[in-house]
Length: 131
Image 1 (cartoon, rainbow, N blue to C red):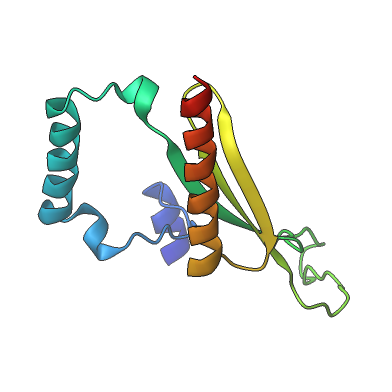
Image 2 (cartoon, rainbow, N blue to C red; image 1 turned 180 degrees about the vertical axis):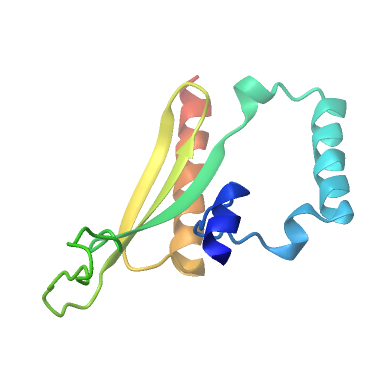
């Protein structure tokens, strides 16, 4: 009975999106605005002079957590017991190209990230020198 009422209100059950509390606080929003103001005050050409760096992880054994089954029957998926492996990719891009990327088995730690930045700086120095 409650479900029918909720359905009439057009509510649906959805997976939650978790957002950290500090992401959209007034202080964080102000800090973002100040950062952008500084970029514009220094007349930095955003489109030509910014390098975007991003890191993301991939689980090699991702699979759907949902499945189909006959009414009244559970949806079951039999899998081998495996230790899940992760790959992490770090990429540095500009508006025109990928400058550098790196992938490693497992997560990224400070040493791996520092090495990526050092290699990126060396690459940029070489590009500037040859320019």
